[in-house]
Length: 195
Image 1 (cartoon, helix red, strand yellow):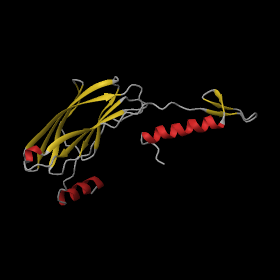
Image 2 (tube, one colour):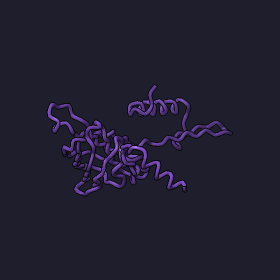
Image 3 (cartoon, one colour):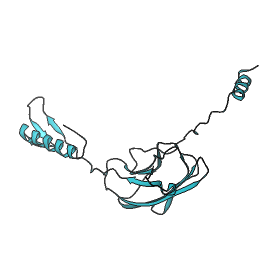
Image 4 (cartoon, helix red, strand yellow):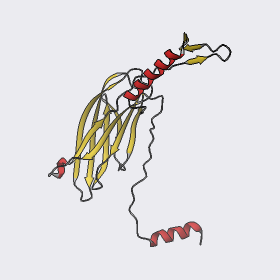
């Protein structure tokens, strides 16, 4: 008996173990993207996502009728103009008992001009506390703040003369120290550096 035949016989003898289908993501956020839309499934196991439809600025960017695991899913990554954008979401779910539920929502957000990397807008499916089960599936949005691009700072010190230049201008150690302190304060306000 061959290995494949033996594996088939063994698999027929074991009881079937239910498992979630593998999630194959086709979209990834790249550093060159201006916008990434992410769907996060935080629903309790009682609710199974069956369909997700996402419309960005009146164009369908995601429409899949499949079960979605309880994790983050990148549903759009690409170019987008700076300014205000509209995301509309339709989420359809079922329970293990066969009941059908849906949540609909719209959200506007601002895309910053000149952002250093992709801005992210995260749609979260969660269970809203309610006595009525039909009101429990809900959507909320998380828009991490877009950070303005940080201006690069160049400090040059001559190994021969010891001359110092800050951003191409002759400078001294006190001016360089003030510039570095200012940069550290700016970044700690953005939450990037914590002292």
